[in-house]
Structures are given as C-alpha cells and as structure tokens.
Image: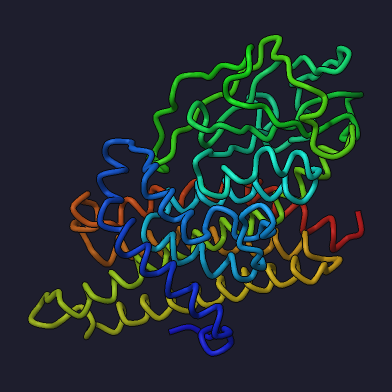
Length: 382
C-alpha cells in the first residue's frame, strides 16, 4: 500500500503489475544464486527486454517503450524488489541507451538502438576514472583527432558491464581542461585498442560485472561522437539526472522487500511468549521504516515528474531524491536486518544481500555528499 497507488493510471498499474510479476518469477528466485556465483543473468535480462524494460524511456522508432521518467520509477522499484543488483544494471543500460536516443543522430540510433532494446547487446556508461570520481569534470581520458578518427588513450574505472557490454558510452577529453573540453563518444566492444581490467571483487552488485575500461591508441570514427564536440559534460549530467531517479527507485525496491520481510518476521517470530509484533518498541521501528520509505518514494516521483515536465529545478530535485532515497533505503534494509536478529545476518535470508546491494547507491551516480553540493549551490545561486 502506497500513497501513489491511487494516483497511478490504468496503464501505469498494468506495467507495474508486469514488472512485479517478472521480478517475482524471473528475478527473486535466482537472485541469491546470481549473487553468490557472480552470474550476469543474460537470459533473464533479455526476457525483461522483451517486456520493454531495456529502453523504458527510449522512443518507439527503434524499439523503445517511450514511457516517462515517472513510469520508469514505478518499473525500477518493482524490478529491484526482485533483485537490486540486476535492476540497477538495467537502469544503467537504460541510461546509456537513452543518451544515444536523445543526443545521437538517426544513423547512430539505427546502428545501435535496435540490439540494445532487445539486450542482444548490452550498454555501459563510462564517466568515472581512477583520478576523477566526484570531480568528474577533471577526467583525463583523451580523444585526439586524426582525420576522420579519434584516437583514445586513458581508462575508466568501476564500469558496470565492463568487459561484457557491447556498447560503451564514454566521456573523453577532446579539447581544453574545462568541462567544455569533454565530448561523448561510443566505443564498440571489438574495437582495436580497447581492453578491460580484471573483474572487481565487490561487497554487492555481484550479478553485474564491474571492470576498468582501458583505451590504448583506441581508434574510433569521429562519426561515433554523440552530439557536438564539447557537448559531452552536458550530456553526461543530463544522463545522471535520470540515473539518480532510477537508482533512487532501485533503493526503494530493495528497501520495500526488506520492510515486507521484516513485517512478516515480526508477525511470526516469538520471544518472551509474545510475537515481535506485540512489542511497542518494534512496532515503532516498523512504523518509522514505512514512513521513511513512503517519503523517499514521494521524493523520487516528484523528481521524475520534474524531469518529465522540463522543470528548471529538475537537477536539484533529482539530487534531493537521490540523497534522501538512497540514505533511507540503506537504513531501512539495515533496520530490517536488526529486526531479524541473527537470521538477518545469514545468507539464507535476502536481507543481507539487499543491504550489500543498496549500500553502493549512496556512492554512485554522484556521492550523496556531491548531492548536497548540487542542492546548496542551487539554493544559494552559486
């Protein structure tokens, strides 16, 4: 039950039900196995793509679902309730695909989007570098113009889908050291000079591979540039606005799954001759968890609608939602683990996996400290 339930259109309820059913049947039963064995669930992802989840807000011409950001927030919450890690990869794939659709030309869309929409091909977003995390504008990967080509040198760090994805949407430096010197290019997997680091061993997000993406005299056509030369940083930031709403929704899904599990556990588990649900202190804990989840959901959907409406303050609202929802999501998962006691710490239960998976949401798509910077700068007109 949610405040938003009565506000969803009939169409939104239909794809919410579709995503919920898919998550319950095709993700949740296998999520622990994917996590334990670090399996990238290609078949499940492609099944999700067949339902329209690979290009939620990509236009229909090349196979997208042409839905809104508010619709996407509904979908990614449902998917994440089944498997946070896999839903988060799907959100990244959506973001990279949308950037091609929104800022590319028809030739580029026709070349790359059809296979991305079926997930025959997978996509990665490449901004972060070892030396430029929060300070994204200081990225050092270069793209030197050589006739009709760019020659890329440098590397990207912590790339979801690294070594597995077929399409890498990359921010590279084609000009000076300012943000205006950054351009956006697509690098295809089999390009000469492209290689990958070892797979990272991570706390969570184990159903998606993560690796460095390395460019050593990597030659690509200038025709692979998305948008104009120097537009890359603006494109990257536009992508991140939507990405922050998506990752907020993924936190909501993981937190909701943990809240539901905690409620069921409290109704079943007995101590001192009473159900946990009969202890007022634990009732209050559950009430706070539900309240924080509802507040986070409302913030995420407000930010999504701001994006859909072209609101001048959309970037701030996205930062607010990301800061609040990912902090709240982690806390709700952690509180659910505490309510489970020792059982919550066991891998026999999904709580600890959700906890590990949502933790990184407070770091990626811009750390929550950077979200505060974005918000305060807007408030102070800086």
